[in-house]
Structures are given as C-alpha cells and as structure tokens.
Length: 138
Image (cartoon, rainbow, N blue to C red; front, side, top):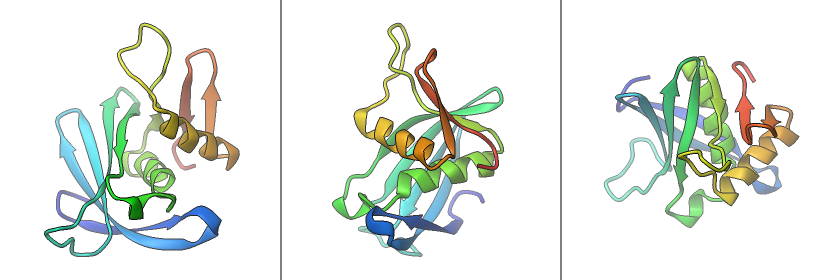
C-alpha cells in the first residue's frame, strides 16, 4: 500500500461497536506514517488520526499518535493501527519507554492503549526496559 492508496480498517471501539475507517500509508526516510480517515476518499476538510513509527533493525518503534478530533477517540483506532503496522511492516512493533536517559516519552494515553493490547493477549510488557512489544502476526 503506497502513498495515497486507502485500505479499510475495521476498528472495535468502546462498547464493542465496530466502525470502518480508511487507512493511508505514507513512507518517509526511516519512518512510516499511517493516517486514518473518516471517509474514502478523504475530503479537503477531513481531519485524521495519525500514528508514526520509526523503522529500526527488525522492529518499528511507535513514535507518536495524534487524534485531533473527538470523533476519532474511543473507536479502537490505535490498537487497530498497531496491529496493522506489525503485519504490514512484518516487524515487531514496540512502544517508547519512559526510562530515565531515553530520548523518548510514552504518554499516559499510549500506555493505556498498550495495556489494552496486553489484556487482549496481543502484546507483552518488558518491565526491565519499560517497553511494550507486539509481535508479528499478532
């Protein structure tokens, strides 16, 4: 899926309701950005949910997620994008760490997303590294 190509992304939100969004992948040097849109094709005024992953050897580290509009919240989009990224990139996807000395920060919202993935059995938490991992094919 290259720049501009949209793929359906079913998401299960709060209360178990499923809603289909539209996923766009944008490749940047050493990063992949996934943008989730409300409609296909996106309209000019369309705000989007965005997740950026830094590509590293054998893994992709989630750098940030951004949901500027309230209608993207509570829809299960972050979990769906992280699962999709692991399969699409064929790598382990990991979170940022909050350990001292690391040049990265994991927000409370991101920690909640990763905790839900752990609870669902899709991810694991490495306490020693303070990092979550979602493995290929999860």
